[in-house]
Image 1: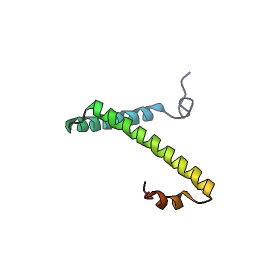
Image 2: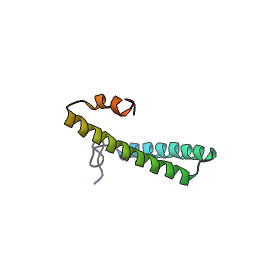
Image 3: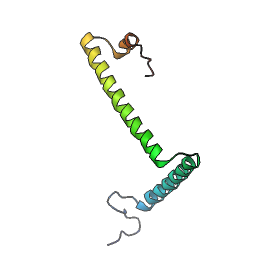
Image 4: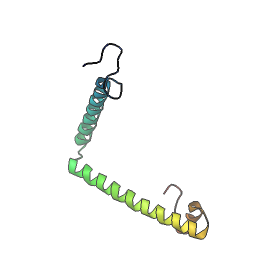
Length: 92
């Protein structure tokens, strides 16, 4: 049976229509952003390539951070103390 007045909607106790409306707003905003990027001359293939390169960069950076962390533990120092030795900036 459908919930009566004042009773909870769905398993979460919330009315899903608000979630649906928010998702539709986000979809429209993303569609506008995509149209803007396409208008600037970006292609879907180019954007996908950039995303792929960013993922690869992040994976490599994570591996480097992990290695610096292990080296710091071995040497008994902080990773921050290793940065000058390898000509790294703290923002790297």
